[in-house]
Length: 251
Image 1 (cartoon, rainbow, N blue to C red):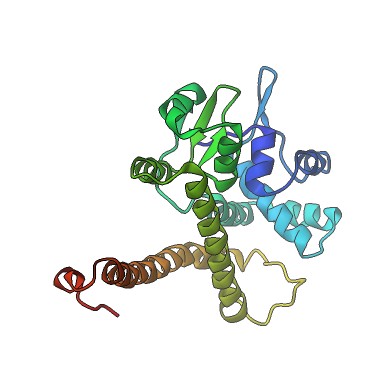
Image 2: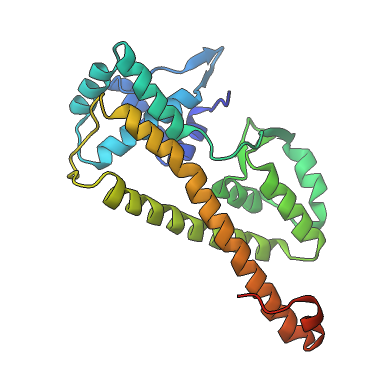
């Protein structure tokens, strides 16, 4: 189970530490687990926080949200709500996280001028999160591996980070496009003030769960086709007739 300090929880959820504390004071968010002087939050807190933020964006007051959460928190209603929360909060990847000493990471990439600013950009990209002053949690070992390979191939770190940020922005746009499609065609006819009833929760949970593989497979398939076309064009431009022996036209 992933654990978060309050600043990490706020960053992952896209809010502020002050807001997290306000939601706790208003009894919308359960208190964290205390280990000595350290307060630790779980994925369940992250899921609940995202539900709260979503309802606030729709214009609900703290009192209305507290009433809805209280109503939901009884018997099977709570199970349904937690099921939806879990789908919303769980990562869209089966990658295991890895805990790495920050000093080891800096030593590994010492030839590439990895500094505090580079680490901060990687945190914003979701590759790492801080785990205390001396360690980081690698949230995406695949992205870290890809970065290692590209650096080894000669791509400068500033260029790599810039491209990663562009890809992140573009994938955010793709995600928003998929959700607009869902909003317009899967759950149509709902005004902006609508919130699901307990009877709606199981169907919404299943729709959210189904969306994941469909969105991922669609993007992966189109990216594969685009890379095939782009590689063929690049090879033809750089190496001329030789390319036809290796990359017949693919459209």
